Length: 522
Image (cartoon, rainbow, N blue to C red; front, top):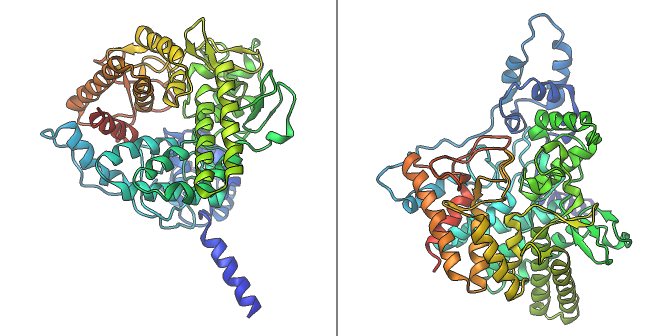
């Protein structure tokens, strides 16, 4: 009987884990690296999303045996041994008679995935509830994308799918300790901007029990982002996501634990690292470059001049040396939500701890990120002990989370209007580098952050102008293509957005969500 209970306990634990069987060790094998380096697939993400037709160990053994034989064809070998990425069949076709809003609402079922059926040889981390994917090459659920998708779902009363998605993220926190970039095993070294507490707040608008129900997962996520904080004390020290500022206060940075090329961008990362090593002005070790490339991917801003030492070239990337204003505002909100949740639970002592932490972080945000000279919030360079010269839309997060003073909000608004506001909405940064999170591109989440941040300080005319220009650009492209895009060119509205390591994608989850939220927001 005792053994039977032990077996049932182990079975229960196993059922609570996201299941995947392709070991991450596969990414260090000759087979994997040969496929990626030889560009068997034009997009490096394709191979990591393939499903093996038999145990990977058997495929690797066969490859080692056959690759030196005359006439060996690697492309055919892969076709024989791997299924291409799963794309659910759909009869959906754009209807030119539909309005943009009608098109978005017709598209939700196309972007919805049922609870995952575990496949023995897949990289997918199976989830127990339905969810919505961004679209295009992104066929799994992405962390920070999902919050902005939920904003649109909320406007059309799709509360059940929002709850399902939040439950999936809670499941990931409970099973792997944090929310990965997306539910693939090659993302298990990093997260994405921590929007879980905002998702909980969104669910809480119609469910009063949500705050306490998701408290354990909010706490676990906070612990993940603050891991190692008690091990560092001296200014300039860093441990995982935590950094010690010049005055001894502790803030956060983006940080991926990996030191190798990203599996989903393998050959691209190697090329960047080689250029960095060959540049005498940089001479950066490859593992350091890989770490910063991965950490920039955790930020969601992959890639941007925010992370570039020389402001222009990707090989100068230094993400781990930057204290980002947006991340620390998100952490401030997480601390506020933990304080509220513990208060509601009836634990005033714990509530007080997080209230104090939030206030300490607010002071640090204002100390290190506000520039009176630039009239804007800027990232902070930890190595050089100066603010970053790069102005970006991350500087509006202190308005979104109401950290800024009224005077700072007014000055920030003036900078937004004079420098960031373009014919198609808000440009991401003022720098044109060829990276997708720079000019001339605009992104839906940043339009929402800017719009709501200004609304928080009653700067309504500018907020409404941003809304008008962004929606007009969305509709222009929709009328021309009958698609919603991942990002848009906001400087030349006759063109679509470009730049980055992959083509512009259509679908598109967060663009759809923000468009609906703006359309329904007064």
